[in-house]
Length: 143
Image (cartoon, rainbow, N blue to C red; front, top):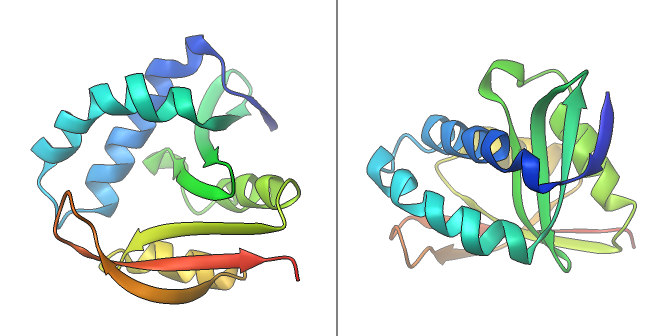
């Protein structure tokens, strides 16, 4: 298992993991929304973030994207979840930051439980402008 910086040739596997993970974890949002966001993910969000992938031999099984101290994305291939890869990626970025913030949909109970188990606290409730879904702002801090 190896965590390494994202490379351009990782784009399609990372986009596939993001899309399938988004559809699976957010079944309360129409799949068409996620499909419409794929070009923006490819052309805007991934290029503006610092992204790392986790490989299992030669296959990418997940990735994490940070924009400064904001955790913009943490996705594991749906067939590889519950094997500790998400925690490995989260621990990896925790070593690089004193504080990490993120936003997570309130209806994504698995993600909320994962982040709470890993030391994040809920700060406030917000509404995602794009989906009109309620979400939580969360924060982890080394202090």
